[in-house]
Length: 331
Image 1 (cartoon, helix red, strand yellow):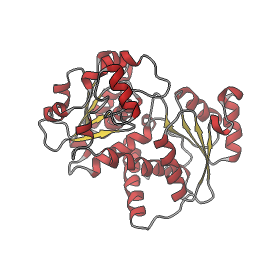
Image 2 (image 1 turned 135 degrees about the vertical axis):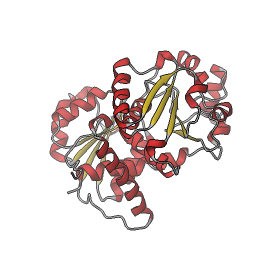
Image 3 (image 1 turned 30 degrees about the vertical axis):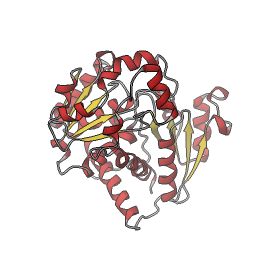
Image 4 (image 1 turned 45 degrees about the vertical axis):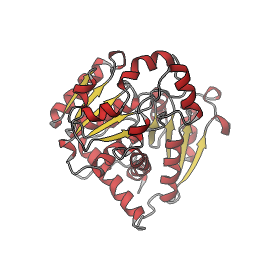
């Protein structure tokens, strides 16, 4: 049966079937190839997209801007600096206003409940550019990067995620891999494990797809045999209790010994960015001085190594965003 996502909202990858997810992955690859070859067709000419931006994300905004421009669509950014502030208007009122003017809404913010409320009240597709709970576009970009960086099939891959296992990056990766038969290990301090009902949900789906998902604390066991080691920022805008988070997460930073522990010379590093990986910038210098660590999620020597495919991954965020736009908006 053909896949048809027209008019659909996408807030998490849990809303997509495995066939729909595979369709999107192929569409990401096709759109990336079409642009590279100068053969891209503009399928969204005349479309208008509202970007409701309640958190600072250079990557999400840049990906949407370029994706929409390539496809002939227009983007209006609504953030505090543009006169929009949630306190001034209930989100259900905003949704009912925006859907009169725009063909789609992308939400980038902290509150997943706000994104759900936009879906409830808007009559146009709502796409999740990032919330504290979910980042489906990033997970699509991650999977395409894995496909393009390995000769293995997705269902033959072993992926280890190190860091905050309850983060939007870890949760979205778990939902994606559970539908595609991938072996995923979430390696995290117990205090940052995803909640038990979520783990039960994704492990059940993984069993049905022929994959498996494990949540564990031991780094050596978690990364053994991994084709990809993934990590993500330890901190986001508005996070507090930095010292506590650094203390818990420091043993899960990706250093040379972690890459060696995979016992796989072809292991690749992935990071969803931004990354504090050295003392060279002002932020890195402050972190080193305050917490006594030379890096956060990944050390500089690994980040800059030949094993790092971080910027391939970052590049793929744009065609992943474009694929969601085309799939949900194109006539």
